Length: 77
Image (cartoon, rainbow, N blue to C red):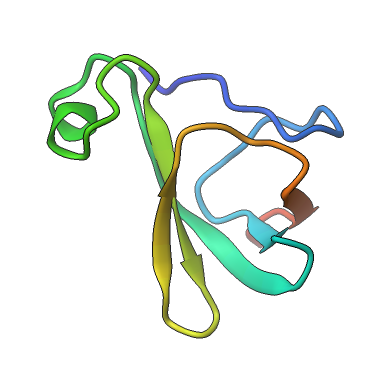
């Protein structure tokens, strides 16, 4: 089961969403990790789950919460 991550504006997070992080880093939600899953355990976020962001500059970051530093831009088309 996919955890219910939501942007501050209320949209549910989905794989493939275009985002802006930290006010200037464009990227995409690469995948979402369900809490209590083997994948979440491997990535060290067993209890909370998390989501991997891949930025346009090639950097990837695992986040465990959608906060004011993460802005929803658009859905994957």
